[in-house]
Structures are given as structure tokens and as C-alpha cells.
Image (cartoon, rainbow, N blue to C red; front, top):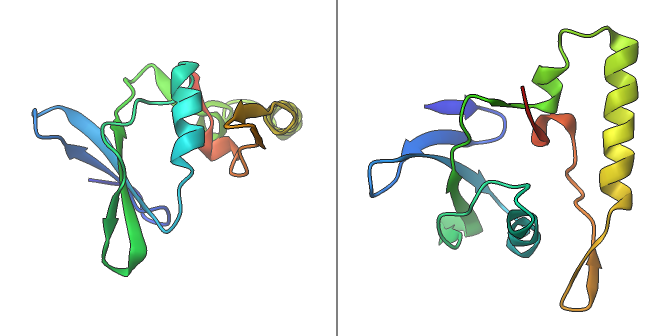
Length: 120
């Protein structure tokens, strides 16, 4: 099942029969995802990304339960000013929060409301 046609994100089934998310991308910061995963603020990766023909990556991760939604969808019930203020605050917080890995500072460059998951 296709979640987001423009993002190539699918719902699938892993080898154990569990539902998972499969994302296809030309680049993916696995190291940063793992840092977020260790902090329990990202879905668990089910395997290392698989390199496909054309240098596409297949990234498999756990499926979050129905108590989660992305920030963009979760804020649709508020007025535009509220949504804008919350989105700006979240974006600033994420951009300012730097994680260290292997002596490098890393910032998540794709911190858009559609990529930030919140519990309902």
C-alpha cells in the first residue's frame, strides 16, 4: 500500500509477517536515524538499507501504531496562525538541537512537519 506517492513510502510486510514501512530514497542518513532511534524518537530500523539498481536505497523500519500522526496532519484542526507558530517552534528546536556522532555535529536537514511524528 502506498502511503505517499511523492515520497515513495509504502506499507509492507516483513519476513515475520509484521507490518512495516518501506521507504525508497536516493540518500538517507542512517547514522542520524540510528541516533534518533537510540533516543527513542524514531522508528526502529529493521535492517541496514539495501542498495538497489540506480543507487536507490530501500529503508525498512517499524510501523508506528495508530496513536501516532505526523505533525502536519495532527495540527489540521487548529487555525493557520496556531499551526504556523507551532511548526516554527518545532522547526527551530530541531534545527538548533545538534547530536554528536563520531566527533561530527549533525543536524536533521529534513525536519518538515510531515516528517515529525507526534502522539495524538
